[in-house]
Length: 184
Image (tube, rainbow, N blue to C red; front, top):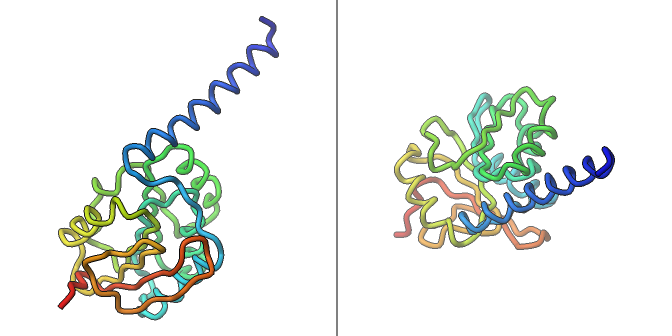
């Protein structure tokens, strides 16, 4: 095998491993790494503005994927600290590269269930239906009452949204909750 053949084989194996890692994480979490578009991120930003997000706030993006929402939040709230948490290696590294020049972004690789969210003034997420009940339980344990939570497309079924914004994006609307947002 020539040097070029070896290099080509290694490149194909690397791409295959990265794609397999996405499938494995999706199988574990039930969530593919979706990227939010500009209208969807604008809806999330608008709801956080409506919530009166303070300067210097700590905002968590749970399942930050490819970094689109993290970057939009960092631009919209330049004095806030935006903390993205992503489990899947490839989207994590892509988002790290994309946000490399943004001083108010901190990205971590891992399961957001293993992180303390107690210092959050706001939480955002763009997940799927399957993890929402478990996420609600995590937020119940860790968030201070009144913390703003914005979910894109997939809502917390047992909670009362304070506001919603329809979005012409792939999957619909964004919802703002003030945690714990229990239904009456």
